[in-house]
Structures are given as C-alpha cells and as structure tokens.
Length: 161
Image (cartoon, rainbow, N blue to C red; front, side, top):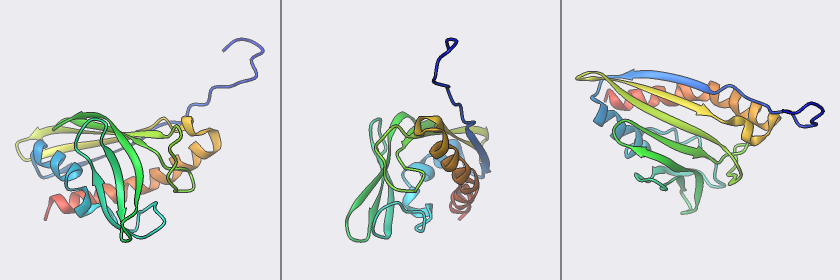
C-alpha cells in the first residue's frame, strides 16, 4: 500500500474446523459430496421456500444448490476444484443476511486425509470473507464459525450410521 492511499486492505481470518470419521477416504468424500442431501440440515436453507434437498454437482464448475419443496432452486456456490477423494473447493455465494448473492463471495475448501484404513481426517477451511466487505465479511465469518461444527457433526453422524 502506498503512503497516502485512502484504501486499506482488510483481511479476515479463515474459519478452520476438522473432524475425524470412521470411514476410508473415498467413502468420506462420497458421503460428504454425493450424499450431502442425506445429512445437510434441512433448516439451514437460503431459498424463499423450505428446503427439500441439498445438491452438490460432482464436477468442476458444478453447482452447489438447494432444491426447495416448491421446485425452486437457490445457488449456494460453484465448484472451483474437484479432486476426489482428496479435496474440493466451492464458492460461497451467500450474503451476510443468509440470502443468495452471486457477488464476490467467500469460499470453502474441504480436504480428506486418510489416517488409517478406516479413519479419515476431514478438514474444512472457509476463507476470503474480506471479498464481501469488512462488516458483512466479519458477520458471516462469525456466523459460520459457530455453524460449521454442528454441520460437521451431522456429517459424522451420517458416516457412523
């Protein structure tokens, strides 16, 4: 930044969460992605109508969206990296008011590391909140910092069924 510049670059710390599941790496990746509709909380929707199902299209450029009971769809993000069974990265196109927002959102990376034949470490990093602006970014960061542990617990419960 040059001296006398009126703009200040804001950096908001990423949210990092991890959980261990009793499953091999491929199964953990599969349940987290293709099986997201089985475990994602139905009350965590962003659309105008109640959520029927959460969908993650399993490919680079695919959408992450929710399908509502009335047939409408609300886009959560798009897949930026797709490397089964190791990792994927998606955009998070949700405003700090929990509404769809195709603007410059944050992003989420989920990595799956085999620790043993039947144990996988799942690490989630939600980052780049500053793209949303200082105040909105700080608000959504606080919200997801409190929300991701419960979502990951639901994923783990599905893995242990």
